[in-house]
Length: 345
Ligand code: PHE
Image (cartoon, rainbow, N blue to C red; front, side):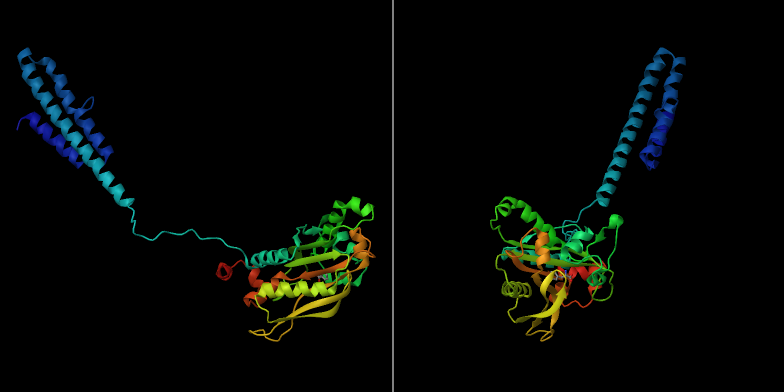
């Protein structure tokens, strides 16, 4: 083997031994680089005779072509390996079942609120929304509960700056909504004309300093208000009958009014329901408060209590949710445990 054949052979071996493109480029430099062995051979030709230059030159060129061919072959091989590796790593098994993104869902209490809005909506009730941070006026005073009224002690709550508080019930929405409604019909009121009935529910969050299996410091209420010229307790009972039968999807259900006291209604009644069948059969369950709106409150609406009369009620959506799904600890709703919450989807 002459020197050129040896050189081609060692170049080829070096290229094959190169495991990475970087190794290969290093090997290439050793043979074809500026001071590589082939380059050095070409440089050394200056000393040869013209005749020898021809034959030696041709031989070196041929060796160079062989080295370059070996280099190209190895480059291709390395690129092929890399591609094969990548294909294997990124291979896609199209027969695998798809991976699902976890779907969100509504909280059980939100489901109840939506249900309440739909059912009351079908009875002609508008839905109103109001602030959770409330003034003393709307939460108490306008509702016939002045500063030193003993009923305030049952509504201990969280106070924030400026004397405002986290509302203890949704009843302030009675006043907010009615005042707005009266303002909208101010001209008719001014002319002594009758204005359209007020028929609204106001669901939302409420707050009290209470915490046990059936009380949470944050809970929900759904206020209801129906004011007109001759809206009576009979209408209230009909509304409740319709609502509860729809809500619980059963006609086997009794409703009773139990005399009670609220400063803003007179007379007042606690509302109980009892199922005629099922696990709670025959047990009276308290689901809300209600009553005929007190004349002082009607006056705070901006209306004449001699002309306008009606009822208000406050239902407990958390309680209704517990009854509907058979949940016995209210706290489960607010722990954020997905194992519990996902059961309602
Ligand atoms: N706001 C009362 C409560 O939280 C419930 C209620 C509302 C009673 C409307 C009568 C009329 O206890």
